[in-house]
Image 1 (cartoon, rainbow, N blue to C red):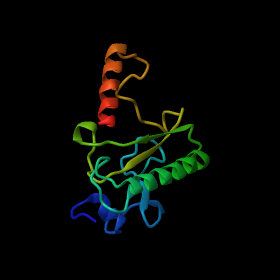
Image 2: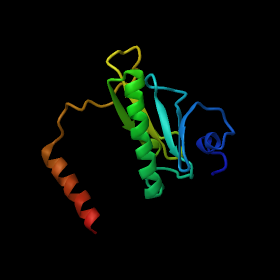
Image 3: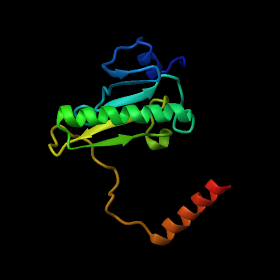
Length: 143
């Protein structure tokens, strides 16, 4: 547990939350600023700042729990789909610096679903730039 971490305090029961699942490694609770009906967060109980800091075994457990609660959201709430979303760093919109996965049920009904993408996925990128960047990442992974 980290001092002054909002999510560590929730995991420890020091702050109120609506927990939906909990085991030895993870905790899943409802987001208080939901992007859609049923939006929740899955966190590791052991504090880690972000995607670069989380232990691989904790990341695996968080992902498995996110899958389980996503299935429950679709079945119980009638969601039409689900987004898993992680923000790593303040430039990428991370506001609580304890690793977490957002599980965001998605609905065709816009009353239930307020999330809008900040980018347009249908707009293709420059193929040469995509190739060059991919080559650089591939080379970094092999170094």
